[in-house]
Amino acid sequence: MFINRFPKMAALQKYRAMALGFDEDLAEAIGIAEATKYAIFKNLSFKKRKEQEIEYAKKEFKAPKLDEEPFKIFKLQALNGLPFVGNRTYTSEDYKNALYGKWGEEVAKKIELWAKNIIGGCDEETLKSENRFFNLCWKPHRDEDPLA
Image 1 (cartoon, helix red, strand yellow):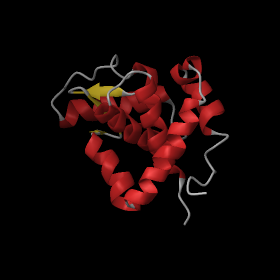
Image 2 (cartoon, rainbow, N blue to C red; image 1 turned 180 degrees about the vertical axis):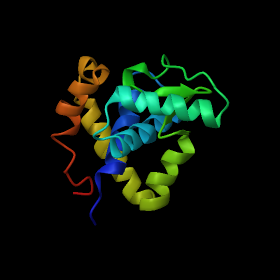
Image 3 (cartoon, helix red, strand yellow; image 1 turned 30 degrees about the vertical axis):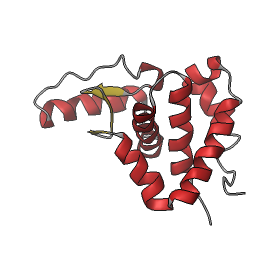
């Protein structure tokens, strides 16, 4: 079975967030938001994405304040305490649906174990830097088969 990069990125970011001190539910929300961010905005700069999201939020949510502090390390904005990317917020349920709902419990657990093992080998400096994380934790492993 071929596992694409999206669920692997979501799980990797979940365990990165947990290693940085976020509780599991919020870490799952961050994980799916980060995977979505990479998937949707791969070639879109952070500044441009941020501007688009602020404009969307003003229009759709009657000018809510998007908070940049809670998930600053991930370059994600927050709306009502949840990660906001791609013009929506993400929750732990979104993560579970993307991994467990699509791939089933057995495969999802193997993807998570794969991610947990990778994060265990990353130092704190790497986990705190999106660029270092991408180059040292994600790139070398993104095409691995977590079921192997």
